[in-house]
Image 1 (cartoon, rainbow, N blue to C red):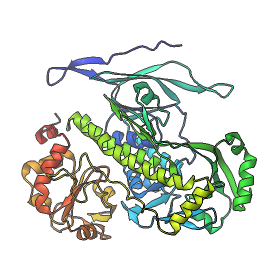
Image 2 (cartoon, rainbow, N blue to C red):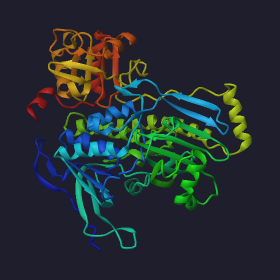
Image 3 (tube, helix red, strand yellow):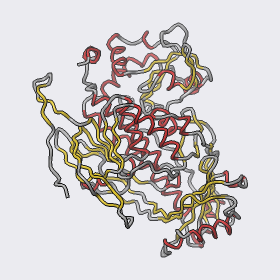
Image 4 (cartoon, rainbow, N blue to C red):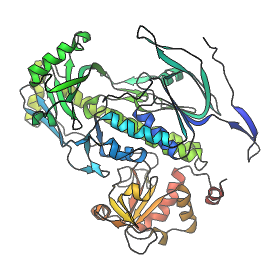
Length: 554
């Protein structure tokens, strides 16, 4: 076995402040190349930062663990990959129905509508999404992807992180093990996006808060061989105390079925092919002439949140930071939100525009959001996993008589880089999602993010330059804020082709809004408020660079 050596970064001369500079192998090392790692790697690579990825599996997963995204997540994918390829087999989901054992409707979540320029909820095929982002990652020229490498050691100090990886190979007996020559690299920051059993989290000694979920469900993913009855086009959860089950489309060409594994039952029985075919025939009247089984596996659903998402220069993201039961289809969505949020904050710090204090707002923002989603998913899971007949009857009666509280609102950002007035509470609309419409600018026409570009955005009725000082405008330019003005005659004028922006501003009684790179609003309000808001944004970002320094490349 190769010796695990500690290698210090090489010191390379003096920097501009008379200090030694370090020769890092990369700016950011990422462990894990699932949806979270893919989004982060693409975001950083597009921004020009050097990234090294280690993923123990030799290739992309290639099967649909993830089957649902929302409009916000689709917009994230748009920012880091080819969204048309990613959603080429997608299917909008209008609702999510919970039925009891007798087929009576308990609750229906209305999923109609649009969000961020997409259907609010979308059924899709995960490999299409991963392929679309992976292609973008590799095209940046700044990201080195090492698949088939397991990280075996992590060391960090105040100035760098050191990561050691080794090839992860399969033996003749089918067992996977670490074998081959080790490789050690140094990075300015490390992100552990390596799943629920995160090596990075374990190495840092970070414990998790366990919310007490331990449900087992058999997952049967299938390919449609011919058109199926219309009922299978709807996302439906059957809350039968005898044995719950559900079905949903996986895009247009595939179908998922799930079956509850009750406490004390042998998991191996459920993973035998004859069990799946018997269940599909008895419960769904489907056979080998209707569907082809792509995957049959029992999953354990858990809800656990890491007690800390940052230790020094190392961050946790995705399932490494939080695991969420699948009853809202939000686990991977939350991970991709982590990736896009951490990406733009690391970008500003790595470019020397913002102080490292900005990175502390990653957990400040993302932990409450992910925790709220986990708690909502836990509550829905209790409905689906009521196995006692008396408790199920009481549950059904409570829904029948309306003696249950309404479902909570989907969370927004409540702290961090959002505008807060003097009382410390978020300003109206701050932390909510920004709209995305179809606009035109010059010869270009399409989704707003594609036309004006990603990053921070300032959308306004009138030209914002009329109320901002030269210094404030220079700050926005240094930050890379994309401006779009609905009024004619401005250098930033755009055509609001589908009326999304005029309608949004009118509906909320505001003149302008500032959107963040992760599509949450920093602020929305009257145009006269903008100078103070811009000054507040500079402070919230822990801004350290003068615009003149940025323009000079200092």
